[in-house]
Image (cartoon, rainbow, N blue to C red):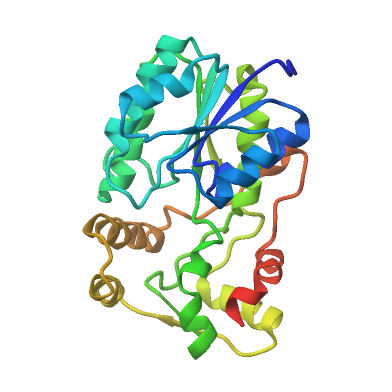
Length: 292
């Protein structure tokens, strides 16, 4: 590894981005973090020697400035926020102009040409934009993060119930910390993974009935899965003020899950990072306080 590499991480105060920064610092690489605003989280990164750049993924000039002097970069646009295609175009052009040696792009396992989710289809199109940039790129397609359970923690905490529209659909939840370690490993060794599209899974596949049993064991109380319909779930989200982009995405990836698009597992996390991926029980144990 050439530790003179300078790495740009977007979403550096988020889940996978924050974990990627941690791993890059552990490996001894200089890191520049793109953040949307300066706050306590960015100040903590700065105190550890991370160069902080404030900018917006939806502003080309910000992307161009952030890329100067950079060797490799991680592109992570929030899946539940509209705008991934212009952001990808700005990122790709800025990376091309800066002569980057590699890009790691966070996509999703449901990304495909004929996806009914606008976000999933846009991620597929974003992959193609990055491919055309001329910069070596690795696309990561994770299944659902185990962090999904944190989004519904209020129902778990107050009512001991999990309400999700995934029926008996199966997937192997992947941990955001594991994703961050994968991102870091590829950023510092881009040539080995250039041009590859990698599906990323957790170590074991379950349906939500089985996941609720694992959570029950960790918490020491019965957690029940209520497999609500897609229509019920999205209606409840809309009533809570969820963005229509989010509702449209969840509607269709829920159906994808029922259709088996998210099923499967592999050893990519372990083979890339050299560490066993986090189990769902380990995730629940680590985040136990959120459900109590």
